[in-house]
Image (cartoon, rainbow, N blue to C red; front, side):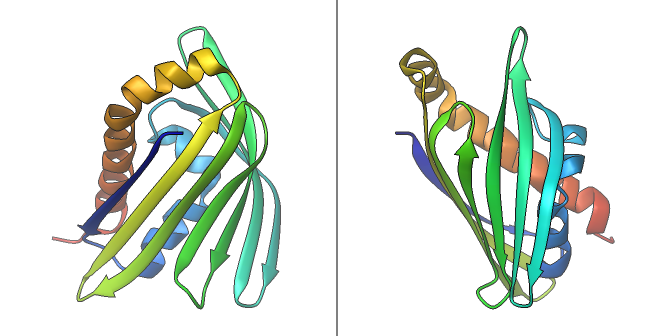
Length: 149
């Protein structure tokens, strides 16, 4: 299973960054290979927000929709995403946020496996490049939306 992590500082507040990450329906505007984002259900449980969402990802002739559960834990300053249905056999990604002055340090971890062995092999080969592009897309979006020079 491909697994990786990225840690970096982004010049915006933790609250703004979390708000941007939870705005799943805007992902097609800036996330590479994201064709559609749809929030199906949101439950706010005081210290936790649970979102059930569909993401359609693709490139060229290939596109797939997967359903995930996104849990934002306000007390832990974290977001954990797990798959519910779709082409993924396993998905878990975690975001941890720490405010440091005017910046937010994020620690992003991802671990996933596709149901298709052939696609899984392809993903393993292009995983690092894709992960870097996606991380850069989130960082650029945050800077555009929230960084005041």
